[in-house]
Length: 90
Image 1 (cartoon, one colour):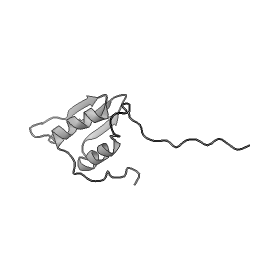
Image 2 (cartoon, one colour):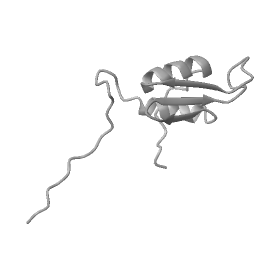
Image 3 (cartoon, helix red, strand yellow):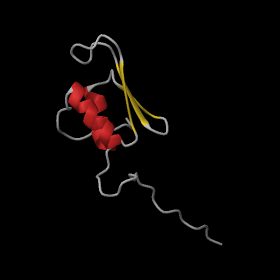
Image 4 (cartoon, rainbow, N blue to C red):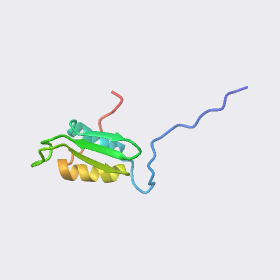
């Protein structure tokens, strides 16, 4: 008896009206490797001291949606250069 095939998996967003934010996150992390972004039930970013002009202490930003977090991070740290997202598998 043949074993059933499993459908291919793909990344999904909790809001289907917005495009996948993973490539955007990878571009940001490549441009700002000192900023730590983790998922802990919500998205949390830790920006080290000095990464933001005038900030002498680490800054922590939390948001439930990755898009909202990336919007704030890009406003604070500057957007990454446009181009293809780096591969996280290399």
